[in-house]
Image 1 (tube, rainbow, N blue to C red):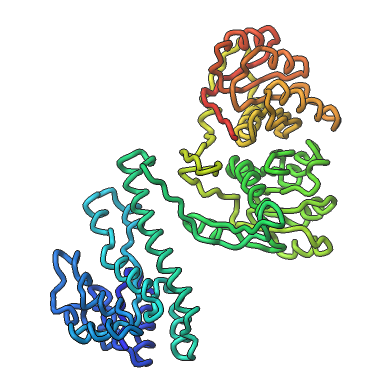
Image 2: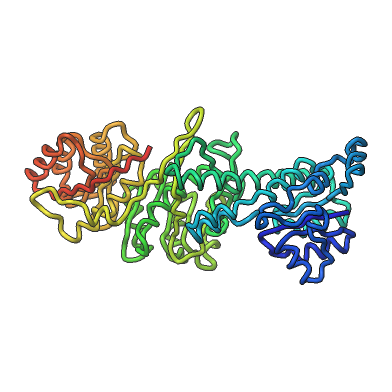
Length: 510
C-alpha cells in the first residue's frame, strides 16, 4: 500500500505519516513535506523516485505525471485498468493526503502579484480531484482534523464506502472553495470585485433548529470562521430567524464602540435602544420604547451580562440574549424558562465581521454589492444647513438616531431623546407614514418626544415631515439630503427653529 503526502499545513503530518507507516503504508512525498518527514525519521520516498523526473520549473511541475495520476485513478475492480497499470509500470497509490498552497494567506501578507501567482496550487487540486473521483479505491485526506479518524478507520476496519465517500465530498468542497477564492481575488483585483462570475463560499458553522418555518431545514454558514471564533451557545438551540434577528441586534449595538449600548430587536427590526450610565440602565431605557414588541424579542448587550441585569431581563420573556460576555451563574437565572436562548461572543465588547460584500437572494439569482457601512465620520462631518445648530447633548442623540435609522428597514424614521430611542417607524411605503406611526406608538407608550432628535435614512422629499416633526417637538434632525426640494425642507426647519443636518450619505435597507 502506498500513501502520497504533500501538504502546506504540516500540522500533525509527521505523526500521521508514522501511523500510516506502522500500518504498512509506503510513504511518498514532495518538497518541504518530504524534508520534514525524513527529518522526523519517516522512511519516505521522494516523488522524483517514482516519476523518474526531477521537480521542474521551480517546483511548478512535480506530481503532474502518469505514474502519479495513473496510480491514483486506475480502477482496481476493472481488469483492463489493472492490466494497463502493470503494462506501464504504474503502482497503485491508495491514500492521498494533500492540502493546498496558502493562497489567501499570501494575498493578506503581500500585494506582490508574482508571489501571489506562485501560490496558486496546480498539482495539489489535480491529485485531490483524482483521488476523490476514484474514492472507491483511494482514501483522500484534506483536513488535518481527520488524521485520527483515518488512522482509526484503517486500523479498525471502518474504511468502508461511506467513510471514503464522506472524505470525497470534503475533497471536492476543498478544491471548489480554493478555485472560488482565486477567481474572486482576481476579479477583485482587476474587475472591482464584480466579474462575470461570482462565488459565495461559506463553511458550515452549525445546523439551525429549523429554517424560517418549522417545515424548512436551515444551517448557518460562516466566512473565515467568524462564528466558530465569536459565537458560543450557553443555553438553547438557535433557529434561522434567531440568527437574522441576532444579526440586526449585533449591528446596532456594536456600532457604538465601547459604550454600554443595548438594543432590542423583534422580527429583525429594533423596538428599543439606549445608551445609559451602565448596561442595566441602558436595558431599562431601551425597554420603555416598546415593551409589548420586546416580548419574545432579541436583546443584544454590548458588554457583560451580569446577575443584576439578568434578573431584570428575566422579568419578561425574551427569546434570545446575545452578549459580549456572560458572568458565571447567569444561566441559572433563566433555568425555569425553557425557551430562552443565550449566546456570547466571549469578548469584552460585541464584534462584527466587517464583511466587505453583501448579497441577497432574489428569484432566479442574487444581487451582490459592497457592504453598506455607517461611519462615525458621517455624523461628525454632517453639514448644518439650518440657521440653528444643535446643542452638544443633542448631537449625541442625532448620532444614535442616525445609526439606528441606517441599520433599519426603509422607509425609516427614528426619534431619540437622552440617548434612548423613544419612537421608531420602519419598513413603511411612505416616510410620512413612518414618522406618524412612530409618534402614534410613542404616544401610546406614554413617552415624551418633546425636545428629541430625529433621523431618516434617506432624504425627506417634502417639507411635510419637518412640519410634523416640529408639531411633535423635535429640536434637531439629521438626514442625507439630496432632494430636489431640499430648499423647502431647509426653509421649514428654519421656520420652526429646528437644527437640520445633511450627512450626504443615503442608507436604504431593503
